[in-house]
Image (cartoon, rainbow, N blue to C red; front, side, top):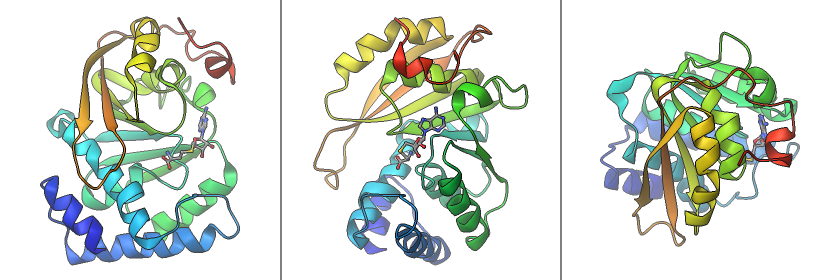
Amino acid sequence: MEKLSLGAKKLGLELTPTQLEQFDIYYQEMVDWNKRVNLTAITDYEEVQIKHFLDSLTVTIAWQQAKGNTVIDVGTGAGIPGIPLKIVFPDIKLVLLEATAKKAAFLRHIVQELGLNDVEIVVGRAEDIAHLAQYRERFDLVLSRAVAQLPTLAELALPFCALGGSFIAQKKGDTSEEISRASKAIGLLGGNLREVKRVDLEEFADERWLVVIDKVSPTPAQYPRRSGMPAKRPLG
Ligand code: SAH
């Protein structure tokens, strides 16, 4: 986990031997399960360290940790970015939301294997789960990577965000057009675009951005719309 360790230092994170060992187990299990369950296209040891693990930790560039420690990762897949953040910040209370049962089975396995506490795995679609009182507007921080375009993603993610909390979306490439298309949706859902931060690490060949949206007013009860609608007819 040399590459991860060096990259994390650039983010001001000094990973302990135990944490590096946890990342190593995570890598081995992910690649092993990937033979049976479609978890990731990236399986090379060094690539996973950068493109999955370090990329997850870049969220810390925009994360105001003093604001609270309840976190949900919407569409977490194999646990990215939620699990790497949980390994490095064991005190967070983390919910991993994933629609696919087979991926959730991996999540249950790896959470146990790594001995992580305060991690809840929820199998379901954001469109449904965000209407349940125990999850709606309950999180200080909402995260999501590689799930949907921002106009859709705002509807899937912002309903989970507590007032005063934030949603950080990890985006690649040229995002300015995507962000401007999302501006109406963000407003409708109770969000306010705070900033778009560039992830400036030489480890990444492509451009990476953190889109930071603050939750400034409650999300109207009709959102998210029924399953599939946020993608089919994005707001705005
Ligand atoms: N965040 C991970 C996975 C990205 S793939 C990563 O960056 O590697 C997108 C994942 O989101 C898939 O596992 C898919 O099942 C899940 N997903 C897509 N739409 C969803 C929805 N509406 N609710 C919950 N999960 C969803």
